[in-house]
Length: 216
Image (cartoon, rainbow, N blue to C red; front, side):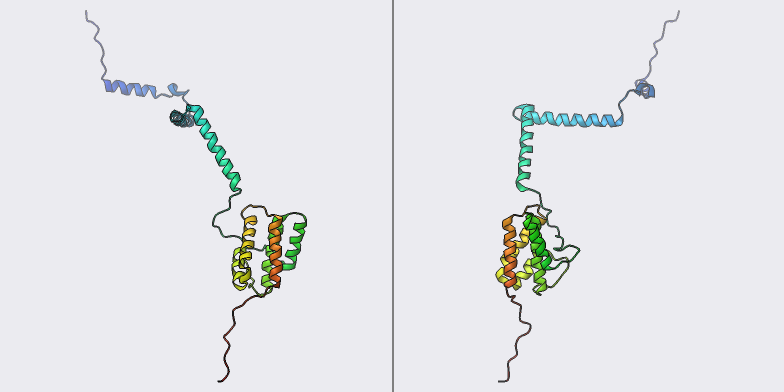
């Protein structure tokens, strides 16, 4: 009688056979999707990071939460302290809008806003009145796209006694127009007084040509 002879299969062939069998779709019907596996991997990484952070933070997880809360509170306080951030180093739009108006019209609009207590609009219109008046008096040449800073710098060279107030007026205009700040009654009064003083000022133009002397 012949005994049973055990069947032996090489190890590599057995592994390949098992892999082939397990690769059949019937064994993977309930597997999570690729997106779900990626999401699970991401959350695991975040959980690992939080675990490491809580391990080195005094108080463990509670200490980590306190630290995060303090950082958020500091960021909120800093944001409130600085106010609306001004866009850095970008070319400011022109001082005037698309529809040109006279200096008198800008002054009338400024006084209208001042009576309503709308100081930001009043400041803007008074600054436009100042620059338009300087253009009408040929202190400044009319130039589309001129900014308040440029107008103040150019006018300050011809009206040196008013150079500093002109710079301050342009800075106030920029702050309330582009910096998100709110004008006050005092800031408007300063521009209104400057407008009145400039109307009485005498420009110091450069001599057109040197005078020629008569015969000796």
